[in-house]
Image (cartoon, rainbow, N blue to C red):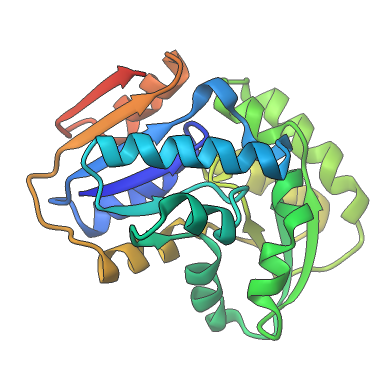
Length: 248
């Protein structure tokens, strides 16, 4: 069974991409809504939270772990998983970005992701990368903020890049695809013509290649705090799926 880990709802964007490619895979999902968002957490906090999340997934029967949280650096994930095979976000993204070699790319992500420089390291010598942390955006999406509020957060953050030209906007937080249309509108209003890249597909491709995707298509969700926005997103994204949601 594949175990998918995130601080909350963001990982649903990766799960959605994985379901398209492997609809019969049995998947355990843990969303740590109690501590969401992870983007402002310290490295030590991220280590402890990741260890706890991976342990829950193993208890659920996961034999392979996919981290759908960019704020969790690969070194943290590997340490928490021990000998369990893991897939993180940056390596598959780097492989996918080979198709855009040499392009000017703006990464938007949480402060933890930007400060860790994991994408700068992963994409070095592939693209010309500029990075922008957007505090508050992941949390606003997680807890169901209105589109107008999300748009304002994005607009205020992107204003510092006005006048610069980029070919692509790389979504460096898995929450961001859940507000893709709003982000696209604000980005194009401020930066001009730009294409958004959602790395979820790259990660899902890697999971299909490396993980056991056989099963009955069962989805088991555990969340550390009940959340109607989370439940609503599951209903919207997986209307025909057999799934359970439980709090731990």
